[in-house]
Length: 480
Image (cartoon, rainbow, N blue to C red; front, side, top):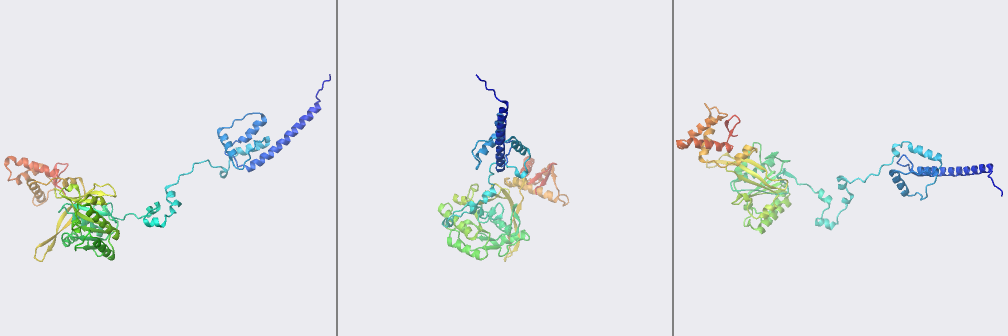
């Protein structure tokens, strides 16, 4: 039996052929890898998972890709225009070249951005959304249907007295007879013509007014305001007045007034004093009658663009608000309640407003201004309003009860004593003991047994009511 031994030269030749085949294959793969690297965008990571897989295949090792690399491999598999072939082995030289390139820092413009979530649209982008440019059908727009852009484009209300009255609003000033509501209303009108603020509320610009005076004598009221507030006036055409009978519950009267007001240049606010005189024959407690009044007031607003301010009375129970059907109050944009307190101080409360919370209070006094004499030699006086800045003392005085005759006598005695003082020189303050002696002397009609007690009680009431002030040093002074 012949043994066939391998020839060393034959083995060597075989090895050479295998090596040559490997080299040919490696070079071909190197060329393919180079072509692949030129067509594929640079990877985000510094390692090449595909190259690592080829190296593992050549050397018989298993390489586990990191989660990042696996994710990139997934992305690369899903990339369009890439073949679905299995990874091909590449030469070690090509792998070394590729790895070296991956290790070099990327140029700033070559870095691929991370996958960020889509940014949300800002309010400005939403506002300028091209969808807003889409218009509704013409018939729908004529009917009055609006887009969001239409609503945004609508003009805001023009403030006449900031925080109180704006153009196009329905306002009411209500109060019992003799409370000063007409004087207060005329003061607001004069401030709109001449001032920059009223009761702490800014007046952005001069306004024009129409005052429909259906109750009371207008002439002395206007003169008193001009005398009491130097520089104030009621210039034409900024101020217009109507003193003849006029009806808010008659549509023709409303349209005629609006027509003539617009012909005269228009106004910003129309005061109607009073609602009762402007609606003869209407029942304030009837919903139908008040519904017509509300409709005509809104008609006047629409025809002139002005604010309409109604002066109205309260009922017997003034705490229940304006007199009449509740629909009238519900239709108001603003309601101001005027009242005279038991102390004589006048108070205005903002009980309703669509521009913010109500509850604010304002204080004023009314002074009768001497205007001369009439044709019979009798004195003419007119009421004028003085604003009083709100404070704790003012609120205390406004809410205090009316004085009894003895308390009034005590206040008069103390006032005369402090104003005249010693030798005609006023006193800034007196002690409580000195005040007690002054009041006791004034209470001569009170029995001696009760005089000290009554005098002490009267002084305490005057202090509590804010008529006189007790200082930190224990001195009594007259309230300013």
